[in-house]
Length: 95
Image (cartoon, rainbow, N blue to C red; front, side, top):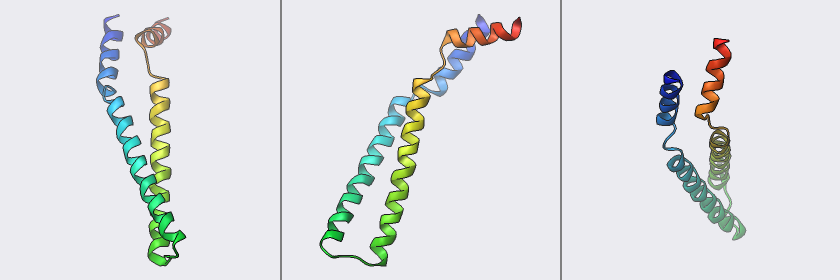
Protein backbone atom coordinates (compact mmCIF):
# COMPACT_ATOMS: atom_id res chain seq x y z
CA UNK A 1 0.00 0.00 0.00
CA UNK A 2 2.91 2.33 0.73
CA UNK A 3 4.22 1.89 -2.83
CA UNK A 4 0.77 2.63 -4.25
CA UNK A 5 0.45 5.77 -2.14
CA UNK A 6 3.91 6.97 -3.20
CA UNK A 7 3.08 6.33 -6.87
CA UNK A 8 -0.20 8.19 -6.51
CA UNK A 9 1.48 11.12 -4.76
CA UNK A 10 4.03 11.30 -7.59
CA UNK A 11 1.27 11.19 -10.20
CA UNK A 12 -0.67 13.94 -8.41
CA UNK A 13 2.48 16.06 -8.19
CA UNK A 14 3.03 15.83 -11.92
CA UNK A 15 -0.59 16.65 -12.75
CA UNK A 16 -1.62 19.19 -10.12
CA UNK A 17 -1.55 22.17 -12.50
CA UNK A 18 -4.06 20.74 -14.96
CA UNK A 19 -6.70 23.37 -14.18
CA UNK A 20 -4.27 26.19 -14.95
CA UNK A 21 -3.01 24.39 -18.05
CA UNK A 22 -6.53 23.90 -19.44
CA UNK A 23 -7.40 27.55 -18.71
CA UNK A 24 -4.23 28.63 -20.50
CA UNK A 25 -5.10 26.60 -23.58
CA UNK A 26 -8.64 28.01 -23.60
CA UNK A 27 -7.29 31.55 -23.29
CA UNK A 28 -4.85 31.04 -26.16
CA UNK A 29 -7.59 29.46 -28.28
CA UNK A 30 -9.89 32.41 -27.63
CA UNK A 31 -7.11 34.80 -28.67
CA UNK A 32 -6.48 32.94 -31.92
CA UNK A 33 -10.21 32.80 -32.68
CA UNK A 34 -10.42 36.57 -32.11
CA UNK A 35 -7.55 37.16 -34.51
CA UNK A 36 -9.20 34.93 -37.09
CA UNK A 37 -12.46 36.86 -36.71
CA UNK A 38 -10.60 40.15 -37.25
CA UNK A 39 -8.87 38.73 -40.30
CA UNK A 40 -12.20 37.60 -41.72
CA UNK A 41 -13.56 41.12 -41.24
CA UNK A 42 -10.60 42.45 -43.23
CA UNK A 43 -11.25 39.89 -45.96
CA UNK A 44 -14.90 40.90 -46.11
CA UNK A 45 -13.88 44.51 -46.70
CA UNK A 46 -11.77 43.46 -49.67
CA UNK A 47 -8.33 43.32 -48.10
CA UNK A 48 -6.69 40.20 -49.51
CA UNK A 49 -3.10 39.54 -50.47
CA UNK A 50 -0.39 36.94 -49.95
CA UNK A 51 0.29 38.23 -46.44
CA UNK A 52 -3.32 37.86 -45.30
CA UNK A 53 -3.54 34.41 -46.87
CA UNK A 54 -0.36 33.30 -45.08
CA UNK A 55 -1.53 34.76 -41.76
CA UNK A 56 -4.84 32.91 -42.13
CA UNK A 57 -2.97 29.63 -42.63
CA UNK A 58 -0.80 30.25 -39.55
CA UNK A 59 -3.80 31.11 -37.37
CA UNK A 60 -5.78 28.09 -38.60
CA UNK A 61 -2.79 25.87 -37.80
CA UNK A 62 -2.50 27.37 -34.30
CA UNK A 63 -6.23 26.90 -33.74
CA UNK A 64 -6.01 23.26 -34.77
CA UNK A 65 -3.03 22.57 -32.48
CA UNK A 66 -4.68 24.31 -29.52
CA UNK A 67 -7.95 22.43 -30.09
CA UNK A 68 -6.03 19.14 -30.12
CA UNK A 69 -4.13 20.09 -26.96
CA UNK A 70 -7.38 21.03 -25.21
CA UNK A 71 -9.01 17.73 -26.17
CA UNK A 72 -5.94 15.79 -24.98
CA UNK A 73 -5.96 17.62 -21.64
CA UNK A 74 -9.69 17.04 -21.16
CA UNK A 75 -9.25 13.33 -21.92
CA UNK A 76 -6.27 13.10 -19.57
CA UNK A 77 -8.38 14.59 -16.79
CA UNK A 78 -11.32 12.34 -17.64
CA UNK A 79 -9.21 9.19 -17.38
CA UNK A 80 -7.00 10.31 -14.50
CA UNK A 81 -5.48 7.59 -12.34
CA UNK A 82 -6.86 6.99 -8.89
CA UNK A 83 -5.20 5.37 -5.92
CA UNK A 84 -7.42 2.32 -6.37
CA UNK A 85 -6.26 1.99 -10.01
CA UNK A 86 -2.66 1.84 -8.84
CA UNK A 87 -3.49 -0.68 -6.10
CA UNK A 88 -5.32 -2.90 -8.60
CA UNK A 89 -2.35 -2.79 -10.96
CA UNK A 90 0.16 -3.61 -8.26
CA UNK A 91 -2.05 -6.47 -7.03
CA UNK A 92 -2.29 -7.83 -10.57
CA UNK A 93 1.49 -8.04 -10.99
CA UNK A 94 1.93 -9.47 -7.51
CA UNK A 95 -0.41 -12.38 -8.14
